[in-house]
Image (tube, rainbow, N blue to C red; front, side, top):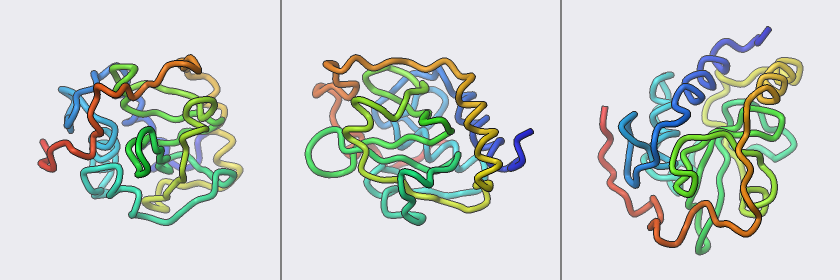
Length: 173
């Protein structure tokens, strides 16, 4: 079984938001942008994070790609030169995020488009992180989740969606 109950609860909360629509500047179940989603999920589990992905990328401690654990935050540069997108790692190279291109919270693979734009991961709290053995449970769990494919020629953060970092800094309950 999953031996890190805090990590399992965090990921369960994240996955429970699947299908909630993407709303630029959104911070609640009425709609999330990518960083609003991450902030909401962590807040349900007692961890306070800043509002934007750019600010979130300065928190916690850096984790290398080959040391990822469930609950680590993945950061991406999808346009320009600064962080503009964030998701939460589950396992087996899969992560959950609010995608503007996908229009909702969904699970994708850290490959192709996302691997090319991945710029690093941060561990916001050690309380969610299990051992390597525990991570095998998360890998199996992630393996059972339906994932969405991203065509190589399609940008899931289209130019018409202004970077979420320009969104509101107010946080809805």
